[in-house]
Image (cartoon, rainbow over all chains, first blue to last red; front, side, top):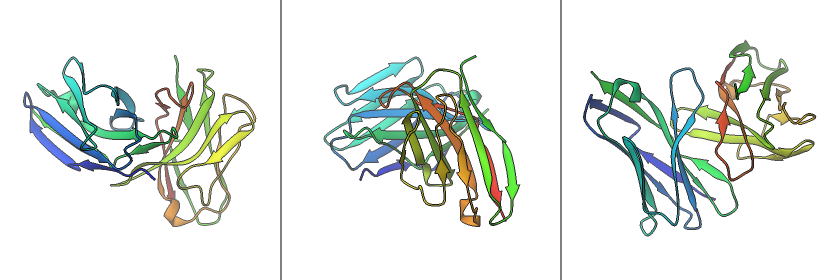
Length: 111
Length: 112
């Protein structure tokens, strides 16, 4: 089955700097890649997603890139703010519609 | 307000004592699912349901039961909890299997 690896497991950045989280997947048939943000005491919430026919997608300060050949995708957060501190999860959905999550990245934005 | 509601938020129990975690959604979603979150392992699916009376196993179903008697409710049942089921549990719902998941706020379970 699909295996999704996420790095790093923790990331500390200075406010205003950029943060990058990387994920690799194993199933070349995976076609949908969402990113979820989990704030303390809450459930994960979708922040951005990308489909396999697109290489990059942006939404204000966040962007996701996808390299199908290398089977990896990344989340980029620019101009980080304290409210970006959270746990971020990547995921990949296979052609069989099963969603597999990465292990999560705890991001800390230092003021 | 559209939401997924889980209860309780925190639960401490002893090995072997049956428990139920409730989940309810008010968005008329067809799909509902349960996940457990453990450090470094991300979210792993326990069970999911495509509609009333239709359920199927996820990746880690051992030791859990579910039921879907009504569209809005999807309780998670641990008939004989064990310490390895200590975890953070999330219920989620979505329109269909291709749409984004809406998660509840979690239930932190400790089994001693």
